[in-house]
Length: 175
Image 1: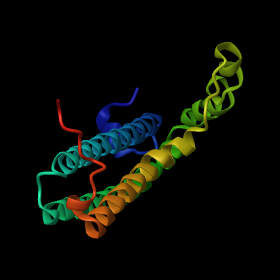
Image 2: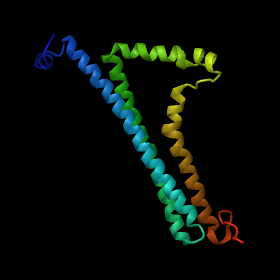
Image 3: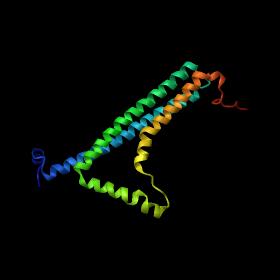
Image 4: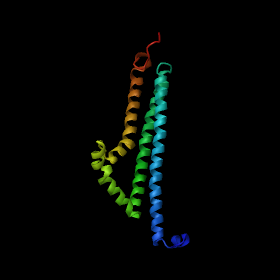
């Protein structure tokens, strides 16, 4: 058994390969956690701004609603750009894990062809499992694009009609 000092001095030793594989695995997990935490932060900020926009529809001047809509568009664009960078970093970490941990490739192959690919899972539960690659792209790029389009619509709504003429967000008076 090699000591930690021997592993550092001789990176070709079997223990060093295990350490490198474990580090690559931890990097991949770290990148996934960062992506989820950042996406949660952006989702919360987008929902708070949307709530401010809707609650201020009748009370705020048109300029303030215009500014909130522009800020929403900017945050959606920034979110999409950050997700693109995060997706690239995550792919690099997974590729490193593939090269440094051969068992990771075996686990991924088993997951794609076995119970999670929808064959036996669907047989036992009656539920169909979607391809996880598509869900990742929807999560990374679909949400920012959809929210950016929503902010674009709200921007267009304030810019063209204004809060004085559009009352679709107004609540009926209480009796």
